Image 1 (cartoon, one colour):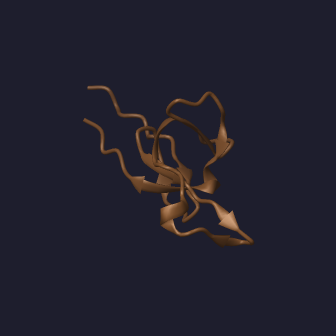
Image 2: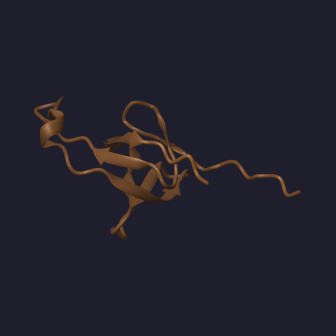
Image 3: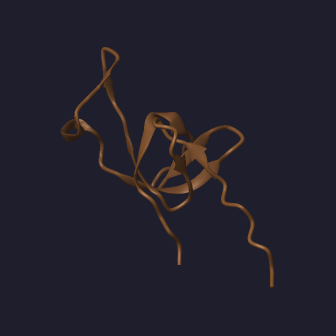
Length: 79
């Protein structure tokens, strides 16, 4: 049996680990204060994790973005 490799993760804005498949939402700020939930962007799935850079790529995007501007909404538990 093959040993499982540890899943790469990066911390979200609250220090929670984000991994591939998790659902995250960007946290927006107004004058240094987080904008309430109703004004935040729609959650998206994480497609890639750049652990060494602390960045993620979201579904439908080709851009690396800093994980620290997102919060985890739902964890992907896998199969």
